[in-house]
Amino acid sequence: MSTSITFADLGLADPLMRAIADAGYTTPTPIQAQAIPRVLAGGDLLAAAQTGTGKTAGFTLPILHMLLAKPLEVRKAGRPRVLILTPTRELTAQVEESVKTYGAHTKISSMVIFGGVNINPQISALRKPVDILVATPGRLLDHCQQRTVDLSGVEILVLDEADRMLDMGFIRDIRKILALMPRQRQNLLFSATFSDEIRELSKSVLTNASEVSVAARNTTAERVDQTVYMVDQAHKRDILSHIISESGWHQVLVFTRTKHGANRLAEKLVKDGLSASAIHGNKSQAARTRALDDFKKGKVAVLVATDIAARGLDIDQLPQVVNFELPNIPEDYVHRIGRTGRAGAAGSAISLVDSSEIKYLKAIERIIKKTIPQLPAPTGWTASPPSPHGADDEARAEGRRDGQRRPQQRSARPSGSGAGARPARSGQGPSSAPRRDSQGDSRSAPRRDAPAAGARAPHGAGGAVRTGTGMGAGARTGSRTGAPSSSAPRSASGDPANRPRRPALFNK
Image (cartoon, rainbow, N blue to C red):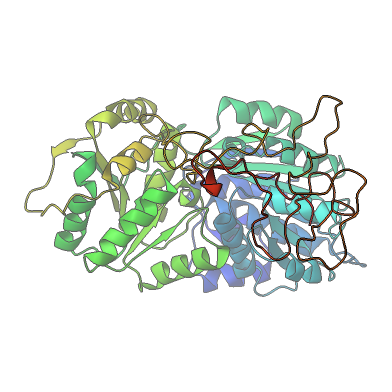
């Protein structure tokens, strides 16, 4: 199908055409031109398009059209007609934003649910009718278990970035969700790439599906200029700070491999006078949303992210992406640099590569079927003082900790031997449990200054002692006055401290 057609040629409803015009679009992208007619036909679809080609509109527009064409007379609370599953919170929010944008002139309702935030406002929102529900699998199952959402009325299911959901271990959640929906429904699988696992999943989800692919598998955007700088891991922060400052970049997305590395890099850039923020899985959803919003508005020049943000970040005219470390999974490189060069715009992606990352670079070049130009490290940068955390940072960059784990620190308790050691208790070993006598009785032996068995201490006497009655086995007996008993035996040295210690008081 030719991409010279216009949206008017696709037969979309007038309210949708108004929203498309408001957004400034006139010509559909290749994936939109091919996917929209197939979705409108009502069949299942397996669609692959590289990131930034407008695939989200490729399913939101025809879904909105079909809901307008077949409105329900009675709408029930918490019973969506369309379910869109995405792997990350950011992508979930952006898909729902797209639904609102194109449905601005309709009465179709939508909502988004994901984890990391209070579930109660979502429960309140689900008490109202909702047409389109955009969700992450985990939080959706939480609602299903609490019976705050009813999936029995789902007419259309969309799995967006399905390969990423499998990478993140959502396959079991997806299967549980599929079991809660009616078998008769329309299924759409959209993704930037399709692995063999995804094709296997599609066999169990899709029925007589048509397939659309507008780009070769795992290819990078043609308009993205890719470059590799060979640098030492220990110098990457200083070199990146120098590159950003010298280039005058006002908006750059930097990817790190670890959460700790993202925090450390953002702190370094801020220290060097650059406005930077970090987003990753350990950040609260509010912090992640705020950082992303500041980045989009230009309040923050550098956004440092882990691969959680590699999918679905839709930033208009993002000029620059940096791989501070290469990803372990080659496909993630495609999605990282796909944040730039979107919708036909030009973009640039540079990667800082240490000698230990050559294996990752070779794997990436094999999968994109292209050799990335390599340049020596830039000059003119100034090295920072060595950090005490430097060795650990380099190890974390490799996804491991070198050497053995540091021995666990414990508070030093004096042992039963050695200088200054605490004297051993009478008849006891290291354990504080009372010694059993030859008859197996666990009660402590009577004190030397205590009355004989069966004798009662004179009431009110200065040498009166506490008996073990009502105090439990092993209860301590001692003088109420605190004065040492005159009958207490002394050691040969005459030092009372060397006497055997009395049994411990277990129950006061």
